[in-house]
Image (cartoon, rainbow, N blue to C red):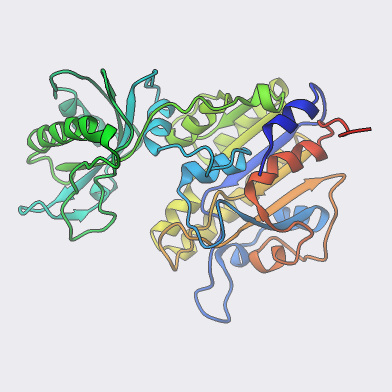
Length: 403
């Protein structure tokens, strides 16, 4: 577990520069018993070289056997124990797309979905509609008014949006309305504690109105709500690590969690390629001590069950990697926030392959970057929340503890 009292005491204002490259959902599984995972299948000469020269291992995002959401998994990578800092997805999404979440506000992540004539969900992501189509539906949602509360809605990427409620007596003690499966109706908002009753009732009023304004808007003719949350007021990177940190990410949720820990959010476009993202890292590198770069599509292809497409994304990251290596980071971490095996089509609990390259890293006897090489690496299996402290140590950004 990261100890912020310790890092505040030991962190130095100067030292090496750190690059954290996260391929979302990187970990995978073989298609057959004697087969290879997506990462093991991919041709990755640049990452293989870093793996041979640096330390490798398998990180555990939350706990053994627990499949994490993307928010908690990234918090762990940033050094925040996700069990201690339990943040709902709504605030990550809302802050990530530029909505303000003030004290007492409640933020919710929304997904457009497709329902049939009986109100049963046939597609949880509304056919992955384009952002432009999502924005059209959000304009309809903006017309909804609920007495006693101010409602703000903003479109995210594709089928996603965020809703912020502002008013007196609101609470985040409300469960999701997404049943997490097709063939079921959206759930009503239910309070998970007595203080959530008012907010649940307001969200149900809002959902009833949303059902009416979205009627006939197939494939996005209904929506579900997830991750009801408030601003957790997290300790900031500049305070606990003494780092001037930046985030290069395309999807709003990852910008949101980065903003919550005090990173500078670099302007990106929804259509940015991996090459575009890496170029933006290069543009801001000299102004920051730490840069986090997020690649989304490894996770998306895993959720789609498309093994070969996930392999292709990993290979494209490796092809573009020399752009980042040319920056000469003192510490390079390459990992995922969690595993998303194509065979599983969802986030899973499998430990995540990780490289920590630095001139002070202890190499192992690995041949390349893959799950079964990493299980024999010098980092072993370790909590993801330890990565930031390891990075600071290798970057010579800690003073000695004790006499």
